[in-house]
Image (cartoon, rainbow, N blue to C red; front, top):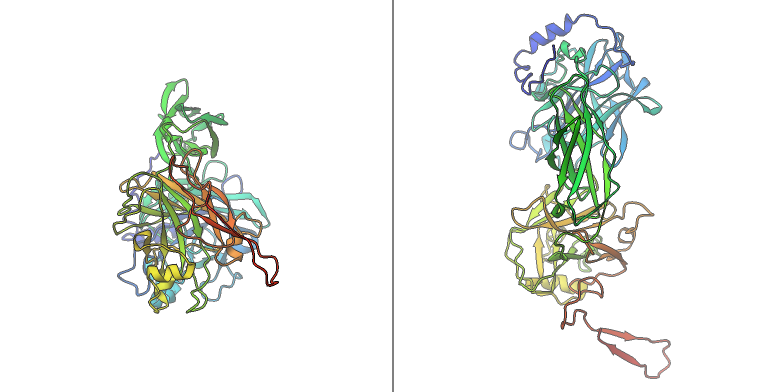
Length: 561
């Protein structure tokens, strides 16, 4: 008979830890699973409870995350001699290092036979200070009530696990393709202070959830986790949609078959920007193992639709591959966004009165409407080129940006930190030789650990949403200076260089124009914004050529675009 998950199955496990230690000591000897799974991932705890009020210097950081492994080989296992553990962060996979907890030594990482081991995730963030930065293995053991006989090691190379939507693999050493055990966890598996407990599959390397959103139990292993479930996973068959017309609703179909005849819950997850959270639609059962869902035309607003299909039978869940559909045609009801991002400066020159520093990072925005723009309670989003949850800042004060005019959001953390008081509109204008008014500058004191700045050498994006519409960006813009060959590398290599953007032909993502060697906040260049009939959109320019100093006069041409 099948055993269904119970989310709180292990909720009392810490209270009964002595029982489970006894059970572990008396675990019957099971043969190692077929497919050679001598070691597997048995628990993932990626979202620790807040310790901000109990541990000095913790801030909002998770301090006690871990991954539990189980040695099912029947003999002591020298992990680093035979295996690697790898972290899937969606845009790539990297190998992490397992070491002792004191010296960072990878030698001697031995997991006893038929026993768990706990890998405590190392934190390296500079925001973790004081007592929180000095935690020891003893603190970790006490926090999680780890049994004395269970070894604890450090998992290094990833500063904290992402709370959701990440994967972990155990692979053969020297062969990343030889996956022994794997699991990709989502918000349905884990939560704040909650683990996902895993058991081996009947076949393959993908671990099966034994208990989701359950109490953490580092080093305490339920023997029933060794038994593969008597269940076969749903099978998803889908022909990817190569392209779709934005003006028409898009139907996504799939064939989903369950060999056990279980009732199926099939869902479509989709989004139109790679960093956005997925939206979900239930796929309708049309009979004959056929399911479909319809994405409304007004949701097809980007250049691509990203989607996947998931099917659950009450015990196990199958996930299709990730698909991309090119979107063509006009946006349904599509106007150019009413707010535009026209320029980003991530690497400004330092204030000449103070020296080096990034006191004047900014994002230039444009009011593309005939109404004065008040951005109070709008949200500025800091986006990652993956499924990492974006950071955000809600604009606290009223603004009054004139119709068809620009303004800047000034990232002022370093200007404030230098203590010289160079935080006025006059200081900003002096630095850039600009002529902005107080009403043209939105001051962002981004000095808290939860805030964000504009990195010089990372692929990042920015977006703006209206109050109460967090999942619907009005506009977004991306820049990538991450490698020497990246399109925006100039902003890393040259101070005061900017990324310029033009309004999108469709959707909400600004078109990257180029990099420019100098910043010009508050001024709009030709082609950046839509033309307005009867309005001079471009500031005058002064064109002057001087070929030599020879005592003669020189021609000067005044041109107005």
